[in-house]
Structures are given as structure tokens and as C-alpha cells.
Image (cartoon, rainbow, N blue to C red; front, side, top):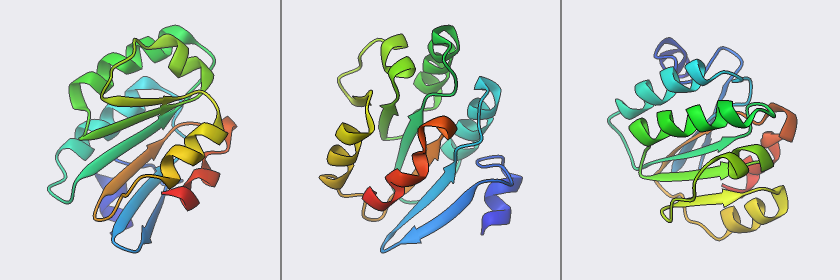
Length: 138
């Protein structure tokens, strides 16, 4: 299964696929460019499967990169979108249907209160934020 997600460019070869209970987490914190995220979201949008969610974290410290990223996400967003990191939260206009968490503590609390049963959850970016730690809360 992981080879399929890599071939489709949803995650890179550094990414991971984690199955927990009834949901699947596609995790790749190596993405640092908007083009990588765009290719991933385009392919993820074509996955005919369970409900989908996106958790995306800071790619860099550049707000203009995150504004561009916001436009890409608006085009290809799945059912649920969550943003994490000070730069991405500061750069994007607030959408009431998305979650915005500048710090890891509030993100962990929010995730632990959510039910991701039967979801495909795509986690991208945040290599410097240590996004690996959020997996246990999904």
C-alpha cells in the first residue's frame, strides 16, 4: 500500500503509513515546498476512500510561502483541515471550518477530543516542529 501512495506522490519515500484502529495516517514531515504539497493534495483528492482530513504544519518561517499554500489548500482541501504552527496560522485568513493551532499543546488537546474513525488523515510539513508526536493523538 505504501508504494501506491508514494507513486501517486501523496507522500515521499521518507513518508510513513500508519494504520490505527479504523483509520489510516499518511505522514510526511519532509515537505518544505508548496509544489510538493500541491502534488500531494491533488493526488489525495483523487483517493476514493473513507472521509479525509488534512493536518498541515509550518513548512518554513516565510509567511508568503504559507499564503501561497493557503490558496493551494483552498483548491484541494479535504473534508477537514487543521493548521499547526505560528507562521502558517499568522499568514492565513481564518476560515471557520478549519482548525488553527499555533502551539503543540492546544493541537494535542484538540486532536484528542476528535474522532478520526474510518478517516484517511494526511499529515504534511512541520519537520522542525516535531510533528511525529501528534500521531498518538489522532
